[in-house]
Image: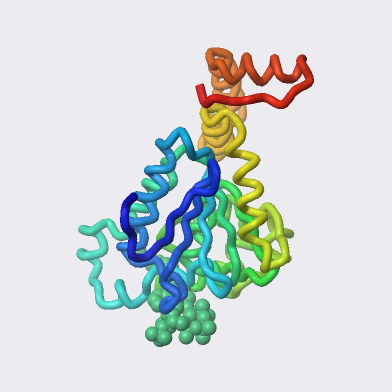
Length: 258
Ligand code: CO8
């Protein structure tokens, strides 16, 4: 197994668990953390034994943002030439379902990382925010785009312009998170949800994710046709035969991922 310095990686059954582990910086996302996280999840994406991923942090902080100390002294051309934050796009291209289990602060890049995941399960102590405006910048890892799609213009403008934090209850009400659970069980709940997903046909789960994400890129008519073609394509799989046979035989299906 690969050795990492900023994250902990384990598998539990068919679920990959990645824990951000820079407690001294509230899991601030420096370049090394990004590279390790992307490498770990990329390996899970192509591993047939892993069907879903949970990304989590500590109880106090999921992640308190991009690492401010790492970028503070940089100039424009350095940021541009190094295409700062470009590496995160590699995470969003992965096809395996990813759940963010968020306790405590999910701020700036931390909120943006949670929004790159497919499902956010929040502890009741979670705090979400895009406070970059307080640093004289703006979100740089997709926040202005993904937050607006998730919660709409009114709430996104409020958060991005004032930098105020919202709590878990407001985040759920706004459609940012899927569920709020007691902070003590947020990882357990995320692992349970991930286990459910990991028990499905992996190609079907990947294509389901791709189809939902297509809703953010395509018009309705085009998106509906895309979905129908993907639906048709799944009839080439053994898992479709198994799933439908199991239903008629009144037994649980046993998917093989092909
Ligand atoms: N980067 C680096 N270090 C951090 C960060 C961070 N984002 N957040 C916290 N830390 C460090 C602190 O500096 C401190 O370290 P030290 O003990 O060495 O001083 C340690 O973590 C603990 O933090 P605090 O003592 O501040 O803990 P508190 O409980 O008092 O406060 C807060 C917690 C409220 C979360 C506070 O730490 C905070 O406000 N953090 C910054 C939040 C923030 O502004 N995040 C946005 C960062 S910018 C970003 O994510 C995207 C930038 C986009 C730029 C676009 C460029 C292209």
